[in-house]
Image 1 (spheres, rainbow, N blue to C red):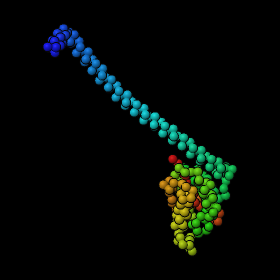
Image 2 (image 1 turned 135 degrees about the vertical axis):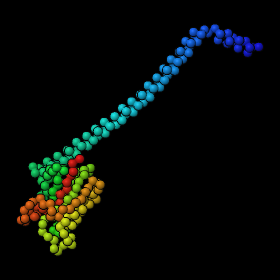
Image 3 (image 1 turned 120 degrees about the vertical axis):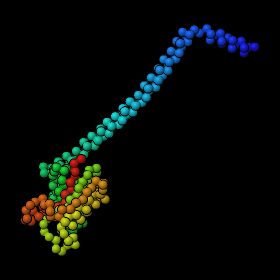
Image 4 (image 1 turned 60 degrees about the horizontal axis):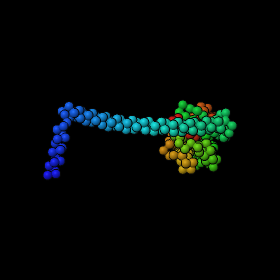
Length: 219
């Protein structure tokens, strides 16, 4: 009996809602659904925008780090030029520091690095390489071996070209194993007598041509 009365009351209450009020309630529900959909769309847009801004911040942070690294590398290069360049105040005997289109050249006389006809580094050569290049941990280098035009007759190397390559390899190996430079940043080449620094044929010119050049490549 009690349940019957409750159902009757609900029926009477429902029957009191006019068609106009019912339509209004349906319209309000539609508006709420539309507002909810707009809120979800806005939320998705905010997520996308936040991701874009986060990526932009990361990119700017990376660029700032790169700019700082580049500035530090330029500072190192300028310091080397000031110390060992033509106008430097700490020039090392037998060492020239030059600029080229490819980068900075450290030209080291063969007599500083090796005894005649040999490919094992002298103690002086080791000290020179460490002092010149010890701070260039992240730079890309190319080590080039050069000889004069005097033909080899009594040496195990057979040709000047082979000797120049062997010397360049020894220098590169010392830079990676002892100085601590990265092996993947160092290339090696040998030119024998075919790329002279001095076109002359006297003893002074030949001494100038016997050399190893370490080229610090532009980034």
